[in-house]
Image 1: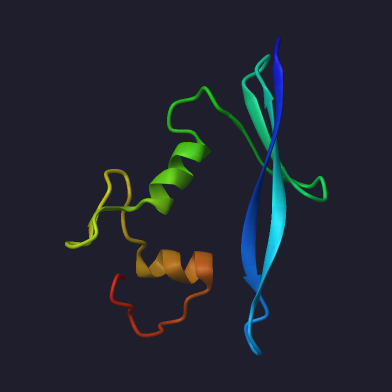
Image 2 (image 1 turned 180 degrees about the horizontal axis):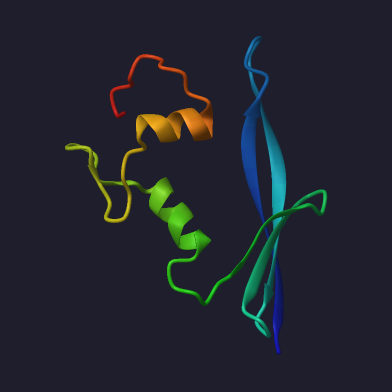
Length: 105
């Protein structure tokens, strides 16, 4: 079976107090077509994500929905399958403690 070893580059801003700089990083992917697994690793060789890419509605699909969540930004209509978090979920997941509700919830 075939394997593909791919890489790409992304950048982040660092140093917010006295100005910021752009730092470039690399991501590496191993597509193991023998068992339909994709493994994503950072530049230190640490696994960030590993998933079966042939399953419908896999984690890659879910991440893409969250990244592109608005079907219509003018009306704040969310894409199908995306919904706003409840207050309880905010507290549990992001340790959100009753701060003023933001405009987009």
